Image (tube, rainbow, N blue to C red; front, side, top):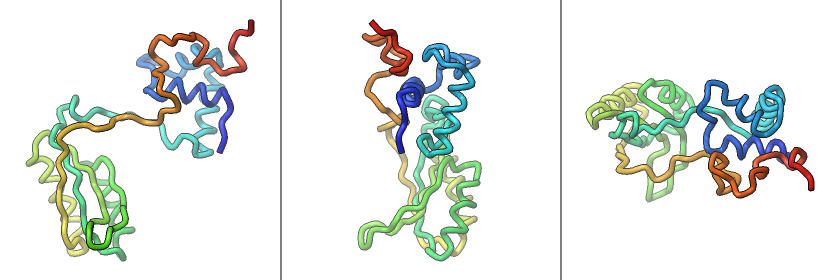
Length: 181
């Protein structure tokens, strides 16, 4: 899977988040000296090729008041997990849900479901809802409450934040659109 310099410039321009403006894609197009249609078409093409998996909001739950966040882990019947996982992921109290392999003798849980809440009691109510859905097909579970944010970033092609003042003002432009000397 390859990308050209224009795709790379678009990714670098968005990797720290979209510009906080009513028309963020217009701002990206202006900064990269592209048309809005080209920015949108390239983003869509990169999504279709799997270069970009998704474009979405990444909220900071702590800043929104959700400070009692618990990763619930479940030991679910392997024969039923394919049917039950999507039902858990569809619950409004679950932000993300995924399957992981067990580690023989060390880790018995194979289903993970993140529950955000303002209090541990609120998270406990969400975990109870999950337990209701899983029913007798969940043999055990636990909740691992987060104590701090260790990572809250998406893709980074370079360590430079394109929103900061670059030492080279043309660095964020595609190579084909940089001024020549």
